[in-house]
Amino acid sequence: MLTFKGRAFDTCRAPSADTMRRWRASPYRAVGVYFGGRGRACRSQPQLSHRWMRTVRDQGWRVLPLYVGSQSTCVFARHKKNVRIGRHPWKQGTAEARDAVKRAAALGMQPGSPLFLDMEAYAYGNKRCARTTLLFVRGWNREVSRQGYLPGFYSSAESGVRHMERSRRAGVRDLPSVVWFARWGVRNGLHSEPVLRKTAWAPARRIHQYAGNVRERHGGRTLLIDRNLMHAPVARID
Image (tube, rainbow, N blue to C red; front, side, top):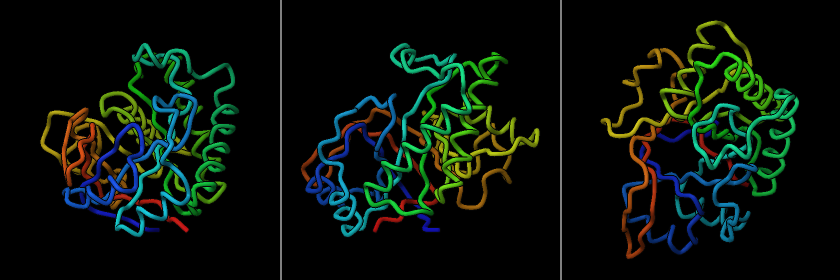
């Protein structure tokens, strides 16, 4: 398992290889890319290819692959309500996991790589919705694991990540191997997140997204990014 500890950024559309080269002047050394999923905001990814993955790897970057699949039935974001989980959540999660693995492999990501399921904030206190969402996530996780990849999970700390932690404490199986929690406007930290026990998803299994929609300029190029601190697995690229 290949891991990285340090700062990372994610951005909706993968930057050009030249921009990535210029951004070596930044404090970041890992990048989150949205490689698939029907809920992905930036469906067009003209830069993202196997060649791009190899190029940025050779530039010294680590890659965090994000898959924005079907969203919770009680998702808050209005623009995600048209891609909600259907009537057969486990089956749907399994099918989308197969799609994620297929797309990851086509980009040169080898087994052992983490694939992060992006589940936007939802009303986890709604029991019926929480049950459906958890079934989808668990089905996705099991299939990703079966095919040799690591199932990761991105969500807001106060909804999806709290839900996963409560499920972990309850002894639920087929949970994510890595958590990427969004809590903005606080000091960045991997082990100070209040919804997670310090022993949960440790060691080297956490990413904290601590700021979002920030414009930064490095090497003469400006990007709109989210800022992250991480100690977690990254993609193995052939």
